Length: 95
Image 1 (tube, rainbow, N blue to C red):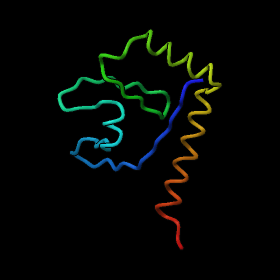
Image 2: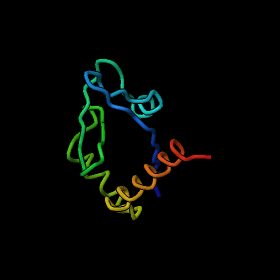
Image 3: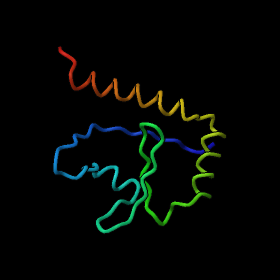
Image 4: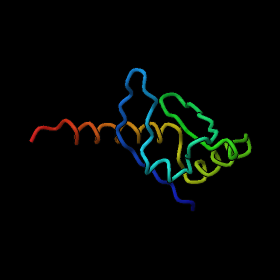
């Protein structure tokens, strides 16, 4: 069985500023200055890949890994809702 990891952080998008990706995420997927990347949108989920890695074959391989591990798009999206709620609770919960 392959390893499946989900990490989450809260980002704030401001007018006239680029979206800032946390350093931890940049390092994890090899994002670097001057690199070319592809962004894929699945409903409210964005996937960012270095361009050199993106092909239909790789996306198909990802689909197979998710399928083999029993991970569905619905499960991913439901997991994101849980993570968003946890971040909201941590940030805005009153003691």
